[in-house]
Length: 361
Ligand code: ATP
Ligand code: MG
Ligand code: MG
Image (cartoon, rainbow, N blue to C red; front, side, top):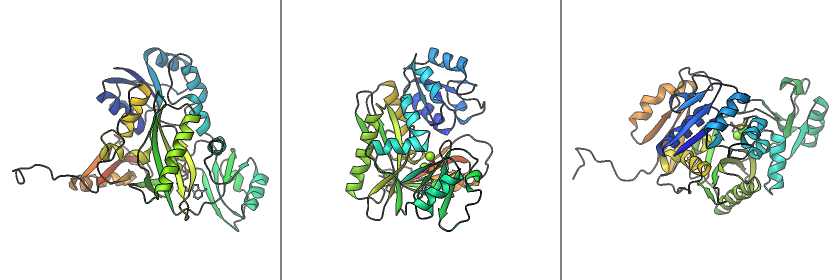
């Protein structure tokens, strides 16, 4: 037992808190929004900004270890905490991943290929970079983007007038356009003794920039599976990492992998593990940060995880009626368009039929 601090109070913190509770750990969430998804399941919430000095001092004081549920935790806040309490994943994982430019350089330094990229700080940079890439590319804000927000795809021949300013006049990155065949991700965890475990990669489909489904197993060669695992091992060792990481890849028509991005946290494409594995990514993360031993990442069923976005929340009765689906809702009351309300994992080859009056021996 002990007390785990979690920075951020969204659905990922909620699911981490639930996993922690099963192992008799207390959780204290630092989140400015009072009625956040994690509030209903954690032991206590400190309602303050992520960089509030008094709140950070209190968190360091009352927790045995601090972790986080999102990659935009201010690096200074994580470093301040790390001076007096273990912070896992380590703050350098935030520096490596919260800026897409730093992130791609870091991945390349680990020997992990990414799309070609150019730093874009003004309109002239953008025009030069696009012409380098033959007019095609994906322009992204370097920081704070998620669910495809802050991005523009160029297919060639567009009028570029005002294109830099249109993304908010913040530092940008242009990536070469990857004509991928499919997208996959791997959920890996590194433990305090340096050991690494990986779940089998998921195949991911996005709709309007937001993750729609994750299917396991992914259609992937054994060689590509090995590359995904080895990439995770290299990246985790380079960061002296502790905890769960999610790494997204594009699969090219020749079967090779190109990394898209990493997230130093539990990941939406790993939600299926709670239904199809004995130890979920959430428990694996808790085990890693508190210094317990790894759980098995073996899968007992193939599965498809579907996100419930906005009005999809109204489909819950149909999902429940399917009986082999694990429905997980985040306690959000307002179903705004594009908002992740929950997810459901359908098991594709569940084991034996359940016992009932009808089929009892
Ligand atoms: P997330 O919600 O996963 O954090 P994000 O906002 O950080 O998303 P990315 O993962 O960078 O955005 O991109 C979103 C999607 O856009 C990718 O999953 C992929 O489908 C497409 N995409 C991104 N970059 C490229 C690229 N360079 N070439 C082709 N498609 C791309
Ligand atoms: Mg992202
Ligand atoms: Mg992504």
